Amino acid sequence: MKSNLQNRRELNIFSESIDCPDPIDSPFQILRLPRKTFLAALCGALLPLLSSPTFATTIRYEAIDLADTGSGDLWQYHYQVSDHIFQADDGYSILFATDLYKDLEDPPLSPNSDWDVISLEPDPLLPNPGRYDSLAVVNVASLADLFTINFIWLGLGQQPGSQPFEIYRFDGTGNVTDIIETGRTIPLQASAPEPGMLALLASGWLGLALQRRRKKPSPAKGDE
Image (tube, rainbow, N blue to C red):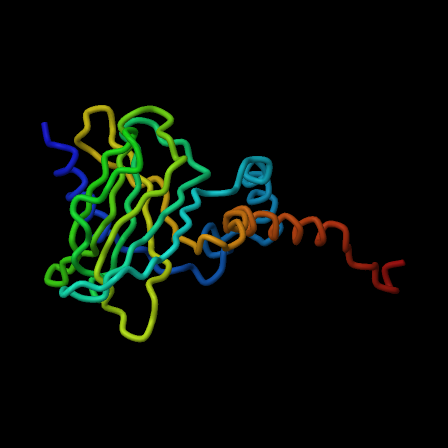
């Protein structure tokens, strides 16, 4: 059986190989349906989304400038994770761009005994981003403590900022991983994220459909 570390390294390569399809110009192109039929079907399918929670996992960050060493501009990230219940074998990775980061602390300090934390160095030759990776080792792993990692910052004239992250889950055998959510970290003092984009689109289409139903065309004079 592969180790969790091997699986987490394979996740890094797997996620970088996924390409997103080109966007569709118009939602009506999906099924080639008349507008009224499409709106009715869409509203019926998306109504459950409007009554369910729409807030995703939140990872807030604070970048701390540390005393520099001979290896470069030393910084530390503090991460505060919320709005997700991590069961055993759930985890998250925060990605470090190859052109902005190097010398990730290895291993990083674990916030508490509920987590197994590793780091993967950015590899500009592949290229693969670096990762700060935290894996829950118990159910309902504690998020009460800050997650931290030191690194060398390569971004001249700017400060470390927001990063992409992935929430993933190992299956029952510990050999296969699924990415179940993606997002970006937000500053520690930033306001809470807005509802998910899908729910916003759903409410917009629903409002349009209702407005169309209310606003029926007036009969022409010749038809009275």
